[in-house]
Length: 125
Image (cartoon, rainbow, N blue to C red; front, side, top):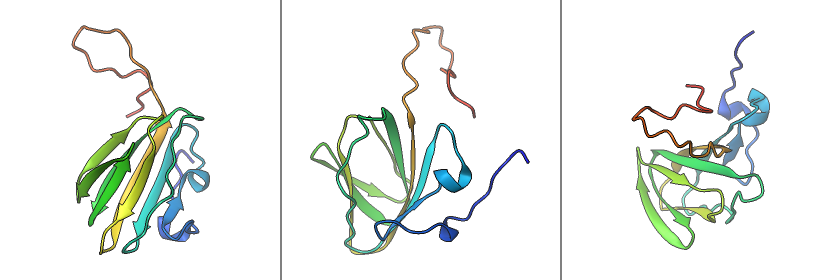
């Protein structure tokens, strides 16, 4: 089989919000998490300096605030937020439920290609 499929609702929830999908999907280079956040829920502050993973938080439902290095970033449905590995981040959910898709992966780096072409090194899409 050339693919793996899982429903996030079939994955045990951690910290009353997070469904970590990388293990059941057996990913090798990318982390994927669905976070269904109850009203008033907060994640623990953390960074990814140790594993050099950058993250993208995509808010797919509701409104929330992501605090990045003590800077509150207001998010609404459809917003995507990139966070570098060394930055501390924490989700602060508001008064209603929200849902995020969180994607993490090692930083690709910066190639010196000034030819106007898209940087595709390490991009599998």
